[in-house]
Amino acid sequence: MPANLPPEYFSAEREFKEAKSLEEKIQALEDLISTIPKHKGTDKLRADYRRKLAKLKSTSQAAKKAGKHTSNFHIEREGAARVSVVGMPNTGKSSLLCKLTHATPEVSDSPFTTWAPSPGMMNYENVQIQLIDTPPLNKDYYEPEIFDIIKSSDLILVLIDLLANPIEQFQSSIEILNGNRIYSPHQQNVTEDRKIFWVPILIIVNKDDDAKLDEDFAVLDELLHNEWEIVSISLKNERNLEELKRLIFSHLKIIRVYSKPPHKEFDKTQPFILGEGATIEEFAMQVHKDFYDKLKTARVWGKGVYDGQLVGRDHIIYDGDVVELHI
Image 1: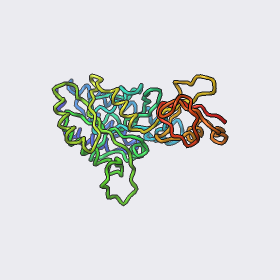
Image 2 (image 1 turned 60 degrees about the vertical axis):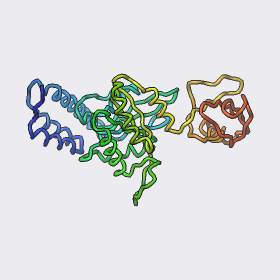
Image 3 (image 1 turned 180 degrees about the vertical axis):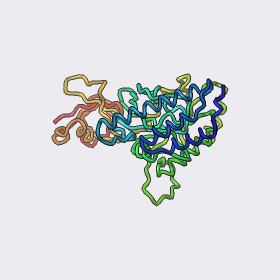
Image 4 (image 1 turned 90 degrees about the vertical axis):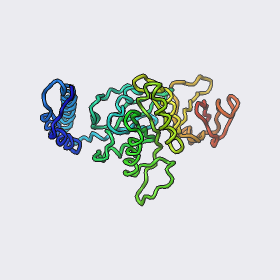
């Protein structure tokens, strides 16, 4: 049954989107709910908004009990890297977070279900990577604070709905990011007088659920692939999610290096995380300052060396290398 929403609903919806403080959001959402007619066609919409209202009130009460202002947009950095998931409304950002992590953000077909960032931890081959589901991008209004999180990220995933004018979604998402001084490193022709935040961007096309849609994705890929890396997924069918994890790790430009005590086996579950091009010296500093100060030599098992080869402080290490430090 259609919802048949009155004009005042859309006015109240805009006021809710534009509300900035937590208390303003609560009041605006209460007003919005009051405009929704009560009939079977609006049951789901009303239920979604009531759940959202309960969550807002719970957050407000917790902040008051703490006796201080708590920003809903402050998230502590965790893991080896931070990845922000951005996109227009209803592209599947919250569902993606659910599939790739153990987080349980609210998932709904209603737009703007995500009103504050929601973090989760993705495990990829013993590396913990922080993923953050962000509120939807919108040309008319968006939370300025959310861009502080996006700017601090090591990678941005721009999620696009293949079934809903994907080119327009892509262009709008990139325009909003660029408008907030966020650019991918490959965007060379940038004429900004202000400070630029360079963050790699990966384009994710969701809802490629059926072989019949492959042609639609092929057209999109043909238009974008010369400038942007683009991958299709299906959250519904859980297709290509492992490949997406691999791509995320690859774009982060990090390596896993394992520490081996002399005459003992190394722990395969606890790698040290460094940037590509890291040296033995940098690895020693991460293990412990004493190793950095007193390091004499090291043995390496891995790429470009024979097993247990002696190397110096400036030797470059690679993903998967095993290192035995000697002081």
